[in-house]
Amino acid sequence: RRGKEATHEEDEDPANAVVDEVLPPEARRAVFEARCKPGDVLRVTSRRGHHLVQIVDVMGDVRALATLKKSRSREPGSGKTTTGTARTALAGTTWEGMDRTIMADSDRRQLYYSLETMGCQMNAADAERMEGQLASLGMLPVAQHPQFAIADAEPDTNAGRRRRRRADPLPDLVLLNTCSIRDHAEQKLYSHLGPHALRKRQGEDVVLVVAGCVAQQEGEALLRRFPEVDLVMGPQYANRLGDLLEAVGSGNQVVATEGLHVMEDATRPRRTSTTCAWVNVIYGCNERCTYCVVPTTRGIEQSRPVESIVQEVRDLVAEGYREVTLLGQNIDAYGRDMLPRRKFSDLLRTVCDVPDLRRVRFVTSHPKYMSLGVVDAVADCPAACDYFHVPFQSGADEVLARMGRGYTRQKFLAIVDRIRQRCPDAAVSADVIVGFPGETEEQFRETLSLMEEGVFDS
View: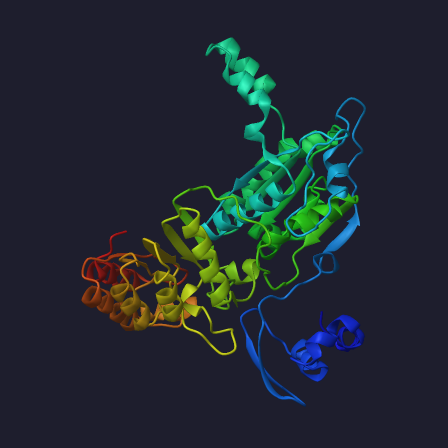
């Protein structure tokens, strides 16, 4: 909590008496009043002298940040649902550390969900975190419904396939994790929502959740287009899904798109692989490339504390994972938002030193921030894979300036040269945009020549 009221309450709490000897009230007030983020290290002063305080996490009240309004969805019709509906079950959730569940009891049935993810690796990682939240609520993927096992046992005939389609159970909760980079992905969302919105209009009790970048971009406008939707949530709320669903269970439509410090996960992501795992190291992006919507949909940069990242990697290795991919929309900017500042190259070396970790990858690099130290770290660390994905977007300086990329053709080629010198066998891939508004034939040919000079693998 922040503000004078919260800090005064902290001062008067007898439970804090034991803390006073280590961190007196005036020092705690200074910490609460500072604009700090997870991973920051602050120096504050009290009657006992100077204190170094590391911020491990920052908690936010998601219900206070979200927009809540009473749902306009129709009540379930008679005969349409069984005892213990999805909404009622969500309303009955409790949070006690990791013990949060809507598992069936004598009055309730097992609830099932479906989740579809569109877009980039960040969305895939968010999906794993949201599935972890749903698992902590006791929900199961609809593919694990017993009726699927019955259908699979039927003969493989045309009639059998028709029976299987009729027998396919429908999920109690539908979660669509969206991407707004391409218009096709947005249209796919609306296409997928249609049948489930129809179920709701017909009186079925189904919870509809739209997450990801389209949700962040559209916000309440999405509810006007599809009033059947229960929850619209931006990517920064991926690990707070359970809290938001509790508000849905109370009969609200919820829109959660306000800026929020991304908290550390209290639940385990439901990983899709048993060998390779995504590990977020920085959320958001502060760049303003003229063609890109990411800063609008994923928010400002928020670097995770080194200790949290390393502990997650250690836990993964202990579970048998042998490869991790460090994720960030602009991974080379890692640590520049922290106090004191940190470098991605140092983080990379630290992660590579985790015992028994075989392979470390990272995406996505930005030529404006990618330092030669990152290349050196890959060359020096046996666990680091010799692979670099560095989008250059254009080979013409004039076009790069109009794109707002913040680097030149010469700087990009210097990075490639460094990679070739330090990691001769490294694979280098890139993204490129052709036909950017105002691009001339000559500028297009400059891009072609850069591709020939850089010798990319993909």
